Length: 115
Image (tube, rainbow, N blue to C red):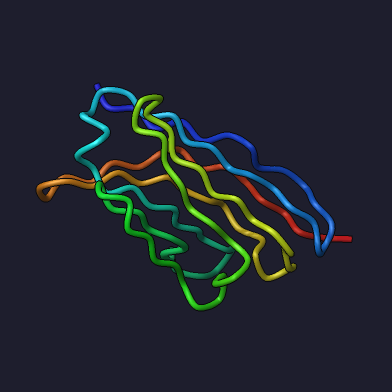
């Protein structure tokens, strides 16, 4: 059974930082592309950042220079370090694992950026 469990969300003031974590189980983690997506109220889910099994990363233009995705294969963990948060970053953040046409999702964690 595949499980992706996110943690680390919460309420933060503009300009603040958060680190999201995602713990994976039930998959050969090192073979999967891992990603963070987000969905704000009334909007479609969008890709935030992506890291391949080989460690190559890319991120959305809206978060470049502020967010960093990383992974620890030995721990089956993927992280999203978010700096200089803005109100428009408010959303539910989802962890995603993908490989060979299969895609798995976590339940999401809420991030709210507000003063």
